[in-house]
Length: 508
Image (cartoon, rainbow, N blue to C red; front, side):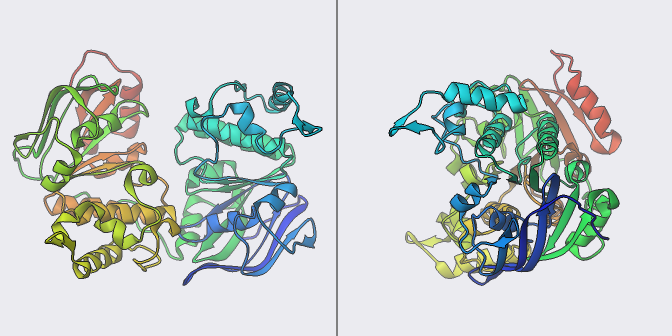
């Protein structure tokens, strides 16, 4: 498969290498990006796609090879130089100042001065810039009060304020709803039609195929191919990414457990965080899903069950005991473990090693006389890293050096090291590629087959429909129905989620 791009070459990489310690992140990569195109980079987590985008944006300097801009090799390359050459990056973790306004963030570092005094024309400049794209953002609103989708618009405006010709977007859709993803794709098309090059780094292959003009496939740090998006299928991309035919996406669902008392029982739960009336059960060896739209109260409910948020009313029983008001420490010690949807904020210490992160939730169990037994800690971490296929397999490297998917595996390893009896998984495959997803799906099935209860939240409803034995429908902080996924369809579920009859409550 070949590509037939015709726009002007803006940046060319020639034989680029990049290493991080013993890890070869990029290996002899040569590539062209052109004006007036959306160029997607895809690959498994750790394949090098984000590193490739960051080399183009000057975040990383190549160890070997040339970066050629407008036909001339550059001697030095960093974000400041790249920005002056018209290249901007919107990272997965947005680099905005939350306490500044939208307008201040857009022109931060690009303020106009006269005689050393900042000119007070920010509102005029913002209005002129926004007129080009029609975002309609309030320049006086604090960034911290914006939704993620609108914060990404601020990043795009900031790039345009610096006359960016190339905008690198690294996993921009990982925290967006389907509607917000569609809006972002429209923005990419608008930028392309203005003559910009949008580099779209993503694991969402359906979105990539729907919006990209060309696609570069990365594997093990090498560029495998660059193809026209119109000439390939999702199956073609997955096969190229993995280097083999992909087996079916989901493992066989483990048999439903025999009738037993619930290990977790929730009745009429109400919190101060938007949960109004939630009721459900989870039995040992059972995979139970909570199906709802973003903002329905799923995450808030599970945070309260785990002990992170206060419970105002209702009953929570774990292993037959009253569990309302217990702390996260008590939950972990009893075998009730939460894997948070935000691995950076609530899950991992990015500066510490994979070994240390895996051990964090279970340190008391691995200590003698208050001293952690490092040998046991190291063996446990190594076994879990191998079982979860963390790459590279060096557990002494800082977890922040790893790709998003491998960070997610380390977070799961941390939960497994605590030897859970019930594990709460909140968006366990967010930000991971198809190969890593399969590994996580197999883990979920294995946990259930070993008698561990699994409570699962996913915005990819198909995951719950393919993995769960039972699922509860959630809207406006309430459970309002129970389904058996094998006996219904995703379409039926979505219809019910969008057409809720209030006052109907689950008969759990």
